[in-house]
Length: 179
Image (cartoon, rainbow, N blue to C red):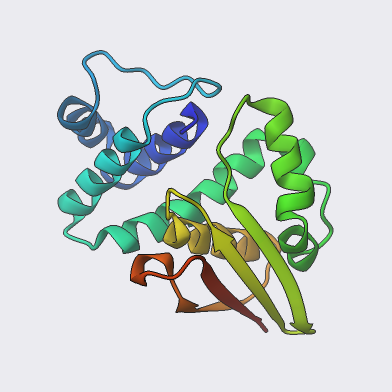
């Protein structure tokens, strides 16, 4: 996982529960002296351990923490990569361009980014069906990213998640309902 993702988690934790909490999480779940640098890769296990540590501190399920993190992460990444986020005039345009544009831009910025496979199909003017597949199984974080994107574009969004890799499916299905 790239350091930029860890930096996004750090920002969320520091804003929500303070720098001391982040330092405690690092002490418990990261190698001694670890400093996350945006373009550097770090073990996925560190991110999962830190996220679980946040869940434990907040007494919330990990899935909820990942969704909250995803929502915060969208704004963090949009601010860091304005050139990418400014390419899209609408939420729908962004969602339909995740694999073909956004992930291509990420590949230009980072070597071997290990991105999920995401495809989106417009069912009607208020419904998009998204298929998500990743060996990391961060579908709940993806939901949060989608909510963050909807907020960025001032759209109201409801997500159904009828099929999930955590329940044994080959990929997740997310049905996006827009108001």
